[in-house]
Image (tube, rainbow, N blue to C red):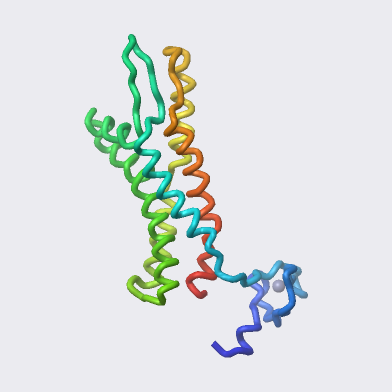
Length: 198
Ligand SMILES: [Zn+2]
């Protein structure tokens, strides 16, 4: 792009073209409508680190049980994947598949796409077009419902505690909390505009 054009930004609110000030760390505002202009930052790798952490935590999360119940001296525990498999085995096939897609598949793919975008950008490769990456990033972001899942676990827990006194959250549950934090942050820090160029 032309260097002179690079220093001009269009106000997304009123369409006024404004010359960007170079010195600014402060937010520049549109002189006509006072809207904050977006500041182009350096590409931040925060999102990448959070995505990698999220994937690692996801693996750990599936090793440890989320909830443990003591029923008649028998200890029952369930992992995230275990819960999905149980659903499918008990002929809740459709629910099982929806849960699998929204809780496991979509969030994991979302993290993979974020990592892939950074790798492709860094190596200056063009294996998958930016449009496809951009669209699939938003698709999987939109269809990831892990935070809904955590609420349902808490509700289940509260209900169970009335019936079975020995219900307790297991390691997996706490790993999941950290996982959700990393997952959320990787999406929040993912600045598509900067990474995809425009
Ligand atoms: Zn404006």
